[in-house]
Image 1 (cartoon, helix red, strand yellow):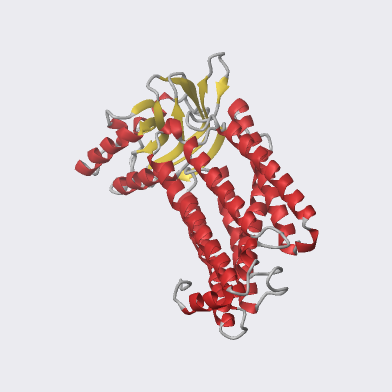
Image 2 (spheres, helix red, strand yellow):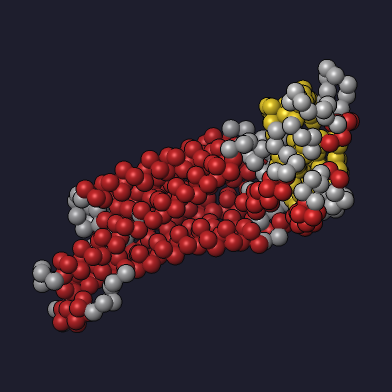
Length: 438
């Protein structure tokens, strides 16, 4: 039991980073000795219910350990506020069993199981106090391993008596994703019109940008359908597969477009330098790895032993990719500064520098908001308003797409490159300044 405090602290961290899921889940636990296992986290309303079915239960002890007490193994619900009290109890007594805490909401112990060989239990519990709860299994029997099949079903009842399997803070997500998918489809229509009316100024990068908008819209449509079916039935009915496919294509396209724009490919130069190719060769495989981690995180849960590792892997890969896409923009800015000293086109180079420096700031702002600010909103927002972080993320993404597409739209006379002869002298002075140093 000496490892229990560390396990509780770890689960406290998990409670901060794990998103609320509400699918009907069936989990198989095999020979697991962890003192505590977090199964689910869900926001309940006043009409919330949780149904748990446990079967094929097997408890084994080491040769020298006494037979485990069935009352020392069981399930319970724990709110965020009560978790702090439980941590305090364990700090005061490292051998304290969380099942003895007065701050938890007891569900059942293995003492309530039917006699062997069935060893099963099935019951539905109403949640009387609205809050966000985590469903835990506790094993307070030392040197004991547990195997079992667990089926969980968490939901809130609507006014008409139907079940809503989405957490109280996520029940608006289907409508939210549908709204943004319509915006992106309209955006795509406008972009196609702009490209069609400026055929002579179109480059290959603009075709990639069209594909990015298309797959972003498809990704949101699948996300809306996924959440809708989970809300109504508790399972995604295959929409999660399409969601992950389109998410993978969309994310790879997004990073590729940012890198290619940052290099000036197709509209400033028709080729990529060797170092720019290496950035693409690094980012794309890493995005494959990141999406595999995303699928593992989304389709499993904190009950698997390597769930924290997959979260750390996803975070590490995301940070590497975010840093990698900045380099081509910086290289382009430095290259333009060097070129401006020798080619005699100061005003034109100043316009290009202005464009790339603004793009650099926009990319940094987008990455900061979607990685830092959105995470902060997700952490501090009340459980009933968890959808706000999703809305903020989609709003920031749409704003980023609008700015990026406007800056690099296909037009015959881009505002950045409409220059007069008298601009040359002023441009030469500006380029001698340190204004464009990063």
